Image (cartoon, rainbow over the protein chains, first blue to last red):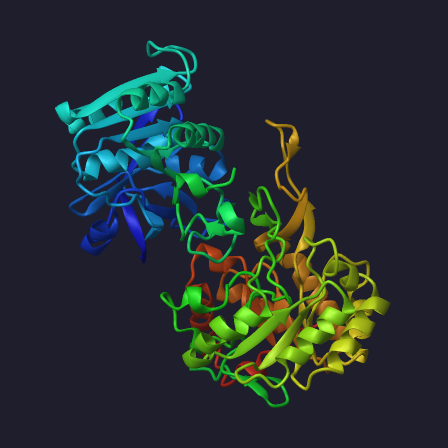
Length: 259
Length: 307
């Protein structure tokens, strides 16, 4: 992992409270920034409030840059989302384990995103080849289905995309786990990657368990450091084991997480 | 270049007065990808107990204005695993190691002190009598001068290692606490531990932390820490004091030294950037060199009288 100050190349608003930041990165960072890993970010000036860096999934990397997608959930994320192109940001990363590299055995992959969990899930679409695969995206309302068009374009004919919202504003009303149930009905040998809020991941876990489907969950627990020392993000796992979401995760085997 | 060496205690001279605070530096190993931990004044380990501890359930941290609340609950791997799996790494790294420890009872504190006595690679012990996040032990010893003195006396009887007692700020009179543990045999003092605090969530109508309350740390508590260090140094000028509380840069650390702290510990700022302690050492040298100090000890305790 690396510690550096990076200039914001572009700050693009995706929704009322969701922004995409494209930041400078060195080639060695880009090389290490595989799907599902994350960075800790704070503005690079010497401010004391907000104080701690905040974790964000690396959505994608390009030549000399990487992208994060920020939902404004508190003062830390609000502060970062408000920074303009040219401003410098303190970066620590890439951190965490990322999604596992799966055997190319023809089994389908189902990607499940809830809300801003799309930032993590999108990294899989942007960086990996797969066949066949489906992206199931649930959000509160249509405006929060960010990156959807780009993801459809990137996935092309090999990625089925379905969206669902709490208020029905994108067409179908309901929870993303309904889409997952339907998909697994047809693809019983699929593997699943999921990222989203805790209650959603818990529902995904139940669906996987009921059907005996293999899956991985990317968790969003609060953390102060991101490199295994604060113990703020510790997650209870099966058999009395505890995982540090920052260094053992954020991607954990679905069946082992205890909610 | 200013000579940053400080004699913390007779027989314990540190290369510089910058230590890392317990609970913010893991067992040292986690920082070795970022810095040379042997260049620190000392590494203070995560607090250790006899048996491993799982810590508290639920949300454990939340940021507050210029600070953070934590309610980790002293999660740690326990003394035996530490000695077997972590201490050898620290010893090989060349770091000066201060072991922070705590128990659920006076007997446990004494047993830990006995277990750590004479172990190769440990420079000093720091007794945690002040964690606000555990029900048994911890702060109950840290807020009553009689219990604290009895506890320190029991530990003192079991070890020949230098003893540092880490004091809680959650008391009416810090000097009474300081005096009590020094009289019971503590060689040095470190202060302050976190201040008891709380955060509530208006959206959910509930406390933010799983433990309901937590320990406040970070720049928000620096003025409280400075005041308490000042009071203790004034009352007990012969006793080495390590200042802790909200240090994020060299200037913060120098403020504690100016008051008379012989060393400092960096805590929360390690989370923001794992290189912070190294930057503080460099900045301290730069500040003192620019002002012509040959030795940091010429600067320590030079606070001028107020007007």
